[in-house]
Image (cartoon, rainbow, N blue to C red; front, side, top):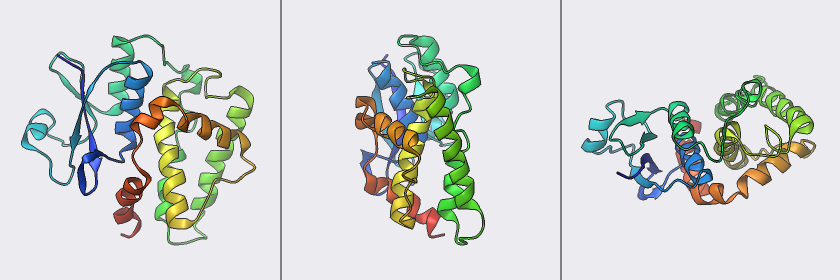
Length: 213
């Protein structure tokens, strides 16, 4: 059996890859390891019965490594892929594994914020500044010269951040965070990223209901 992965389809476009950063993380991992896979697009507003049978919680991504067992949760999935396909290794050293881990949550808070004085922008800037300092000392990637799991987790989140904040708030990552800008450019230009990213308009459509709520 082939490797199969169920990922989110674009909002209103069930035949097009959608904007789930956790789905993209799994696809990036498979691409970086050159593992052939079959992608199944799931319309999350109209989930098919077969999908709910294999995954009653109805969340994406879910992964089947060819043994008929479906696994949910991107953290677990990328670990399983790493164990099954150890080359090239993507393990991040434990001391770097949490670098940038609060960027996504602070981005979401800032994106949804209606009050410019609530500190949410500053909280995001603090996280980006911490990433800047780490990259300055250890870059160009989180673990030096080679891409590792933490980069593949951060890349889709940084893509959402840059697309959504620019669109909804006209906000961009400050120019003085030069290492962060170089890091984003390096990640977004990788072949694996080009092949697995959602179109910007689908990212925007995915966030619109949450921002306008």
